Length: 228
Length: 228
DNA sequence: TAATTAATGATAGTATTACTATTATATTTG
DNA sequence: CAAATATAATAGTAATACTATCATTAATTA
Image 1 (cartoon, rainbow over the protein chains, first blue to last red):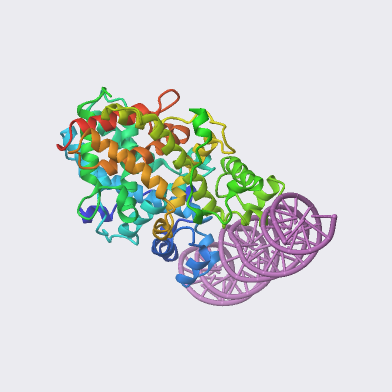
Image 2: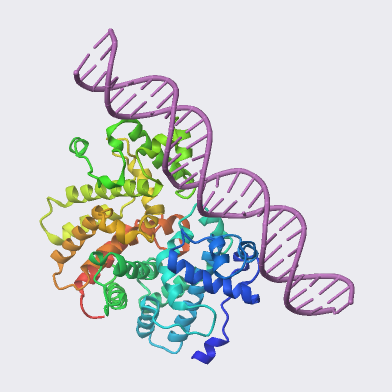
């Protein structure tokens, strides 16, 4: 798997950057170090000026890669969803049974990311933390509709649709496959967040991943569908 | 009900304001107009300077009520959750049967807010929009833990706990009552958001409230619990 | 009613942010 | 080696998120 993954590149909407950060060493450093820095100080405190200093480069150079930090966040989170989509497809591809397949899919998207595949300049453990803590901020804006139209969220949408399709494959009568898929993805981020900051609002904790909770939720719903 | 509600005041943690906005006309205007303005231009673009101009008052006067816009957001959203908690308690209080009670609770917390109770300077329809679009930003910060310790989220936590207790009353064996309660609350905001901006990611739409989806989700899970 | 206090308004000022613009200096490539 | 390209350095701007000071007005109470 590692070998295969090495040759896979995640294609990001090119409107999200000014110059492709994958195209140069500086670009990669910008990506690598922005991830570390956003995890470290949070998206609100993160600035291109600070990043420039950290990478021993210049603020203006960072602007040559990304228009602003919002676009950078969209770039990073798109990368993450693309990476997760790959994990999902890879892990479920060979499974014929729809229920087993869906179960595996939920495992992949709700588990705690604990190892960095280390095949690129992007650390997935850190990036996962960014997604948990900052992803909502990328779409809870006045510009969502325009940005959505421009395709900034395509990867995420494709991922939700894949899960939704797997749900339908298990139970074609079920009325809310899209809502259920989006609930699992979003809800998983939320449960991970609660586990770290609001332990009194979740039953997930060390060694109790959201995975089991979501698998049970999804399969019970699909088993006993349209009553209420 | 209206009469009763008029005499109820929602107690907000007094660390969230410098001077109680309920204590003066200016304070109330700040609250009323900040709600309208945040709905209108979004939390990011909203500033105390703009608010001052809108209410024909001064930036510095606004600062005498709220330390900064983050605290104002916490104040507004706390008020909303307090109001919703009241709705919940009021609506479920007289229901003895645990399942009926839980069903009613889910209805109350997931429905679209369509009428303003008009007993105060706070418009709940608008405030609900703020909660949908901005609530996450109030806790997805580097300061959550400290602010949580200071009790800034108590009302929300109490609300989740109430729902969790109702879940347990229906099925005491169920392993994830807190996660399920937090999923319903958060997930409901999310489905409402998707309905407005990402229609391809939800099955909720006009006349299909998240309510039915969540009722089915919760009851199916509680009926068939610990398999997987 | 005058005096006091409290609330609000006006103005100014600061550090930081989120950029844009310009010019200089490296580095790469033809 | 020349030309093109990428990066660095510096400066500058408008806006934000405040703080501080002082003036004015309104409300309270001695």
